[in-house]
Length: 173
Image (tube, rainbow, N blue to C red; front, side, top):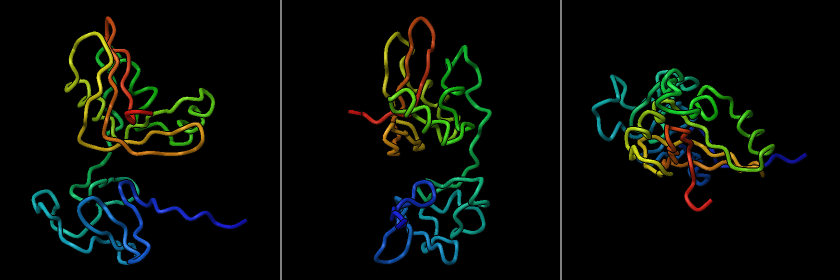
């Protein structure tokens, strides 16, 4: 078997093969030294070390290279306020579960990177009957039946007589 080359790295990073650095939206990360190559461009929330990816690269995320945060798996628990968004698409779910669900149901499955996004999406969406697409502050993933994975900052919120669900969504797919 030959290895398949792919350029995705830590969440929000893309490998620049010419330099060997991982590109975030605002700066480059050097995997050999485990640090960004430029200081935190906003300099406010970077902590003492303005070059670090996150305090713990396995448990924390920094999708834009601006501010690390630990995903909150407990947020969005109220099914009365948020429908089944957390149970079906929450950050506590394993990527493989959503990949398998996409294949079984033959439809894309959104996966929140942090359950606080559920609360943010419902806060931004109109509180009226319908389907509302809202832009949120952190990207999440969408798993497709063919195994493709895409990143999005759009969440689809579905409200009928009460909140039904919300899930990361790629417009046009």
